[in-house]
Length: 114
Length: 114
Image 1 (cartoon, rainbow over the protein chains, first blue to last red):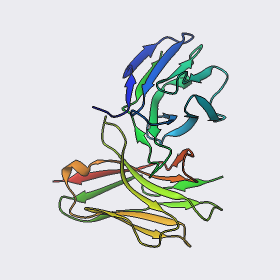
Image 2 (cartoon, rainbow over the protein chains, first blue to last red):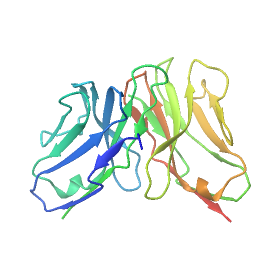
Image 3 (cartoon, rainbow over the protein chains, first blue to last red):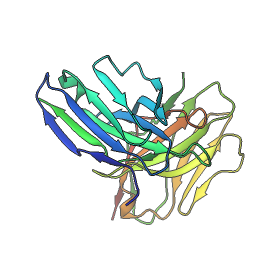
Image 4 (spheres, chains in turn orange, blue):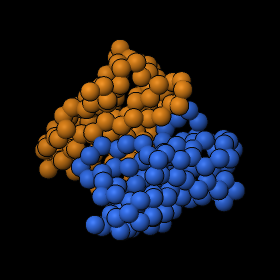
């Protein structure tokens, strides 16, 4: 399967703990996006990379959140000192910077903060 | 800022019938992209159909077609010959330019009834 993959699929953590999620984009896709989706809502943009450069961050991305894409391939999203309000589905998408530029989504990581 | 509105939180349709999902958006841009994404229960988001604003012709993909009214900022999705597998959340989405983030509407939950 050459689609976008995310790991883990589910994460349960206690408030105050740190968590890290991983996203592997479609091979050769140079753009990578993180979104957050709460129950019953549409996804909201968090941040975006082109290759290894982080080009845009949403105001939703507080200083407890950090994202990296060190070699322009996979990306990680870390949340420090988790809060109950961080409970959500974290979606990753990737696209190719030419052609249709359609964003393809991964299955998401569902985070539950107790 | 761009916004996307879907005024129908829930809809249902009989199998084999036709249903239309509504979407309106607000933007000051003249060129942009519009999408309909489908998110089946507990499954990942997939692209249904895409429309470039500079194209007057409405996009079609098999049983799925759109009615794009640029002046009215309206972008509805018509599903013909509805199938049980069409049951899902449908999100209308906007992208200002290639490589930009996608802005999603709140979604419409569609149930196809046998």
